[in-house]
Length: 383
Image 1 (cartoon, rainbow, N blue to C red):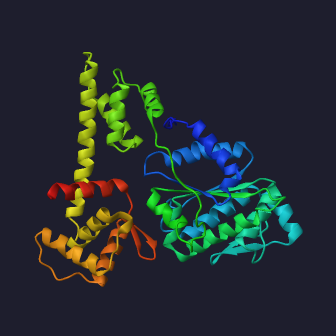
Image 2: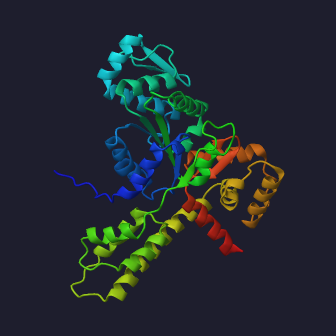
């Protein structure tokens, strides 16, 4: 059986813009790209940016820190580097034998590359520098969902190791090193660049341009629908679903399941498409909010406060504890004042459910910005 892959919308001009920037001195501190979840960020990185970087002579090493959240982020990065070295085994072996390399360590993890040659006790910076010199290619390390590195001390230390690699490869004669880090929203990535004690303090942070009208025109061109909504209606629907391709494609598939031999007027077809989009989004919203209502009371209140305050959320101070009690009372309860211990337990339960993210040092954020919007809207409707 032959299984066809989904067609890919390529963004060649945007990829060229970022490659030109990555090659420039302005990107020496790294490049941090933010885009909401499920808006095409990873597809762009894998299908457009990384291939173009390779075409222009770079060795690209890719690590997705969300591929398996059970694995320490540091280990994910090390595994990606090890795989890249293994793919260049011949060059690494020749270089390693000349230097007597056997293995290297980073952030508490020992990476034994005896078969392909790495140095006993060599730093990650030295290992990457040797790799670049052996291949005579610049190295671009792409870390998807890089904010997840903050969830472990080893992950944080690995970012410092990558900074050391960047610094070590700035000199003349080195092919060079660049870090491209992506994340699901600016607030999360900002935790990596806004504090002086972070490895990539003051690195540039950009919001990745969302898919636009050229993408929607391509969707209509690729669609097998006998009758298609207008581009204007598609734009309205795309804005409703926050520029996320998946719900847009789902509604178009549903529209295609409506069987009718009679032609439908364009206005009527557009209205049907937009009605289906509203229904699907409302169903997703209702399902999520129903889940919030079914939580333990304090868990729901912590999540609501987080949605209201965003990056200004504080979990444990007196104002926070009073706010939780206010929210609990609004739900019809008259509880005792929540404690720091009970709030900490609530945060850990929310984290286990994948609803919130802990950046360390008291910084907590809701994982999905769409969830924040739905919670805020429901609270506004109650007032």
